[in-house]
Image (cartoon, rainbow, N blue to C red):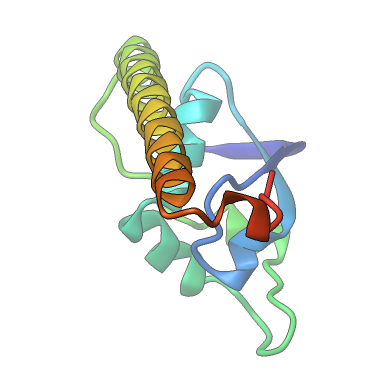
Length: 126
């Protein structure tokens, strides 16, 4: 199921292994790369990778062992593509809501600091 490689970087540092830049290129006619990426970041995918990693101080996965990681799906390629497209769209919408709420919180903090008279006594973080 896994073929050569193209780089991608983990957005979520789940484990020290995922903090590194690593690359996988799936066979395009069998699995969507974005779907595979999220699959490998899932708790199940993480466990599969942990069972494949060699070494204690430096995580290594020989290419032959990487190819042995089971990718379990009953989804067709179009279903994978639609699922991951929906997931990414919903995740982006939630991230935008979180960003807007964080801005509101920052403004609320500024108002409080101004009201209690400490605005000029500290330097704001940007």
